[in-house]
Image (cartoon, rainbow, N blue to C red; front, side):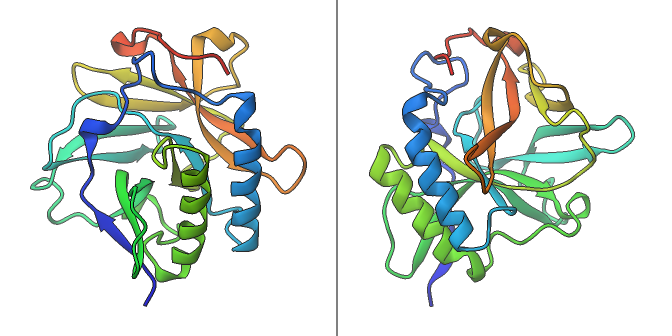
Amino acid sequence: MFDVAVRDMDWDNIPDMGEQALAGYEAADQPLFRKVRDALYRHNCLDKFGLFLVHKHFQMSADEKLVEHVDFVRRRVVVQVMSDFELSDRPIIPTNWIFSSDAENDGVGIMVAQWGFADDLLGAVDPLSSEYAACFEEVRTILAADGPVNRFGMFLIRNQMEFEEGNQLECTDHETRTLTLTPQPPADDRDSVLPTNWIFTPDETVAVNCCECARNSGGHLGYHRQR
């Protein structure tokens, strides 16, 4: 049976947000995004999954996970590092994942980069369901044909709260190894942020940015290519 299989996350080979080599979205990526959009449309997943720029903000060990928690009162999402021991009795589901570099005969391998507490994501689809294996494999093939398969990953579209401004700003606290996402209007100063997440549209727009990382937050060096 063709399925989705979770592989161990390889944090060592994930580019850091402060690295000069981290390539953000560029005009040359438009054909790739169009192919991904069309694949999601064919699999009826346009409103379920998007793409994110694969990166990390701090070092992670093998027994740690990035887990998001929705603070409904303060209208923010807090992503923190938690140990497997801390999560042993708390149901979590993948929210961001990267495809393994090798194609597999019995399914598509993913490495989960971020998780969410199931209680915060009521109504969200289960991305590990075999229902989405064929969609994931097609997207993985598209990404691999364009370059490194792990330059972009997929994320689960989830509506934790209403974001009237239409965007999220992600800031980093390296001391506590915590990311905080808050609703923000799209930044006017493109040099101050790096787009990191995109959702796809059925029209000629193809994709829209829905999350940006604040440059130089939490010690980032600001070595980012321009959009």
